[in-house]
Length: 161
Image 1: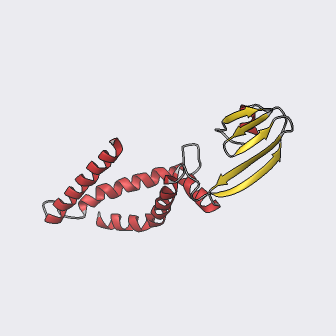
Image 2: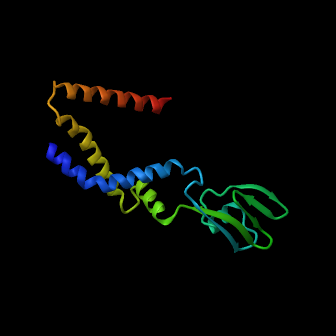
Image 3: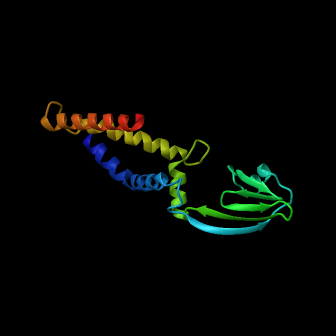
């Protein structure tokens, strides 16, 4: 079990680093911390409502906050429904960080979802195999069980508080 644990750990070290970094970046997804800003001025069809404006700008959750005199105001931008001119700020992660976070958030509709499943199963293997690293009944094994229990309790406390 130690040999499997060791070599699988070395094999997965790279992907664990990517998941760790992308997980840290995802914590800040509700902010603009790592994002690059681009100011966009485009000409669209005239007379679009909020739903069609969101489709034209490829913004799924576009919400018009205010509408007056043919102007639609939304977060980080505005659209003139009379002239069709739209002005908004687009915020995106840099290319590499964007790719890493998309890997981290993969769903079953994405081509690399199997990598997430494989990785999750391997992490579960590490959890289970770590209990075979030391003989049961030894001082270090008992201390390991104590730390495991503390970690599990802390996780549940953080989940439910």
